[in-house]
Length: 189
Image 1: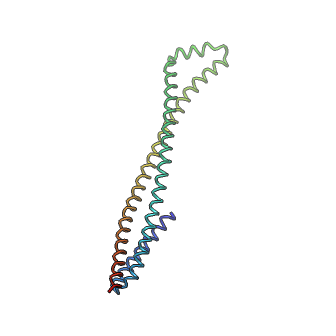
Image 2: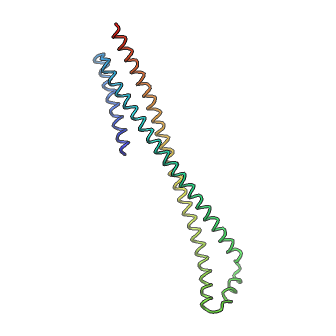
Image 3: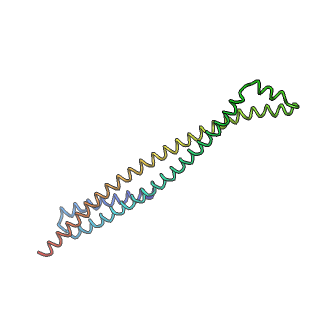
């Protein structure tokens, strides 16, 4: 926010200097005043370019960290999916209800039967929990990917602004050079 305010202030100052240059050109040919204004304008443009460089570096750092987070989430999804697949294979191998009933009926006592029944309930709820974890991780992954895309777009906008400022900087420096040449020419005559 502070960088945006500073950028807006610098751009406003550049606009004011442009108006002053236009007024100086129409009122008098005070080349020295024009040169000072142009140099101030060049300094402001250089500050805008350096500010853009800082913003681009920050975006690149954020993009890198977000990519690391995406990789971490992908690894977690892979692990969760692998564990879920093992759980499903185990449930599939033991899917015959007769085997489950026989397992419960072969209990030594009623307490053991209840524990075994609890085991089957826990296995079912565990499968649901694992599936939910995978869905949450995928949602988180999509959010991070969206965030990454947005940061890349913002970085491209800042890069485009930087290129524009560099072009304007070159024009202003060329204008300053021409004013200096004109001053030297006027001084010789």
